[in-house]
Length: 231
Image 1 (cartoon, helix red, strand yellow):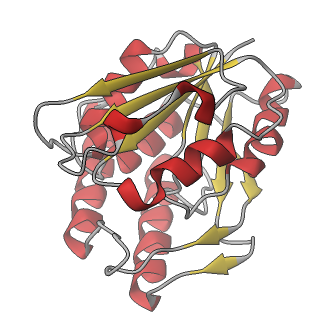
Image 2 (cartoon, rainbow, N blue to C red; image 1 turned 180 degrees about the horizontal axis):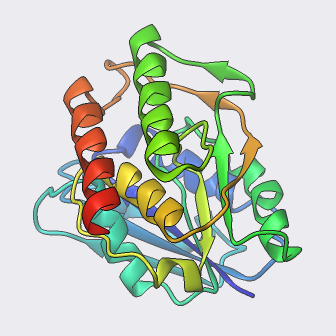
């Protein structure tokens, strides 16, 4: 088994190196590769990435888009270039600690499931906004109702799934609604999501938080679209 970890990057200069170096210290249970997709950043951070920041990875691939198109576009590009048996996501900020990844991979490697989400609902949590939490829980409730599957954190970054599950998806979203599309697509495929509590420390707007209330509304629309059309 091999893990392909995709990291979308957009002007993450202040945190990128710290995240990569922390990733490089994680004792991954399987061989792994890192695919960094720079979504049109103008701070030059991805161009400064050095291989020895992540010495435990078999391959570190850096791809730079000409213009910013959104997290969904970056993730779709990364998944397209991945060659692992398990696919996953790591954001380029410090909200999600990579040390949690081996625990999230365990149920897949043990053959218990083929989809694992890291849920922020039951772990240590530091959110910057009450309404951000309410919005995420609302979207999670909508997803659960639409697909008759229980999910507590539809918009978590930490989503891990097998290649066979990914091949059943039809991802088209460019923005943050990719999270709704991934969650909805996996639920629609019949996958039973296995959720594991994770620790989470949210950034503020001043620190670079990008998701907005309008992205939540687009996420609900995307869930409805996946439920009706399959994409």
